[in-house]
Amino acid sequence: ALKMVLYVREHYTESISAQSVAEEFHLTPNYFSEVFKKHTGIGFSAYVKNLRLKFAAKLLLTSDLTVREIAEKSGFNSITYFFNSFKSAYGMPPEQFRNRLVL
Image (cartoon, rainbow, N blue to C red; front, side, top):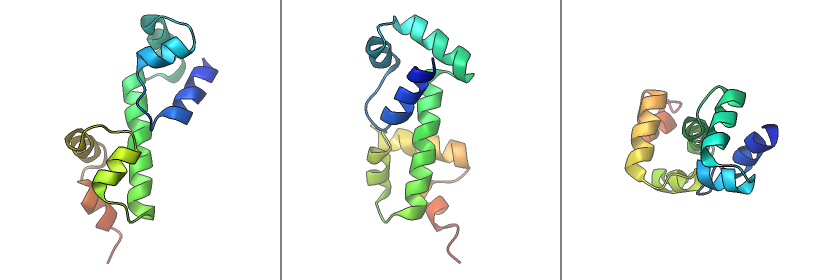
């Protein structure tokens, strides 16, 4: 199970799914999802989204990339989904998060 988590942590910015990771480890998607959740305490999709959001937050604070570029580099396929997910997780839109430390 640890190898699966490490694999996800190495590939979360890519287009990965429970099915693609399950195939990588020669498991059925259902069994993979069950083992992953048992090991991490969180479902695969939520785990990946959290990794992507943390990475995006770091990029917002440490780079001059646009919000769209950050969404893409973080593994989000949709700018709208990224924006809504980010706002839900951090309580503010990405641009406001980036600018909140600027006095």
